Length: 124
Length: 112
Image (cartoon, rainbow over all chains, first blue to last red; front, side, top):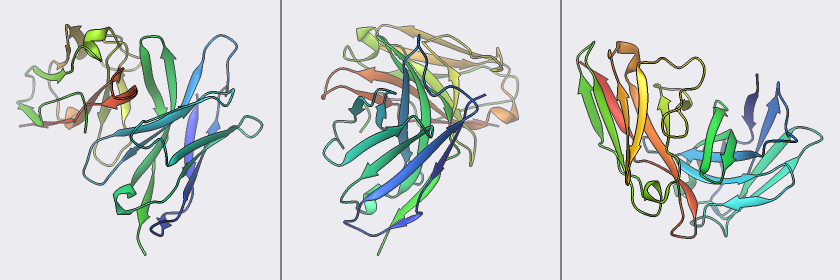
């Protein structure tokens, strides 16, 4: 059974770049017949969920247009890890960050399973 | 700001049936994109409850069911139990605004 685990710093200074990594274990990182959409989703304290983007095993990416200029995803299939980079962070980026496995087709994508999440606070 | 609107809260007594609506538009649900539902228990990560409008993953109780019609979708919980008290989110793809996955605004279910 696939499990995902987020890792990275819990505190980032304003205007700096935040970097998080998700390690995938217990399952295949890629499939010959199904495209997996390795995803990042965040949740500010007390608020709802916001999709940030996903990356395929090929390295192709799709980002949330509202964050596109600041978000970057990368993948390392040799270590079963994918990563999130968010530049020029502000207090508004303070959130619980989740990584998740996405299952997609031409009708959309759903996310299952999710990691436990990592809290990132932006503060000086 | 989400393109999928849910009621902020719904409540019911144990054993009752409650429904949560997810209202979209012709750019998402109405365009034929699937709707998925997640349950987020207090202090936990979201968990997939319903995929592709009405499919229950293995291990999800059959007390949960989903449907889609026009530009909206619904999640129904029958035989409400105390353990169902959680936040629920719908999710779909939207092909306006540059195209993106969107989560609904979220609904808090309270068991009275």
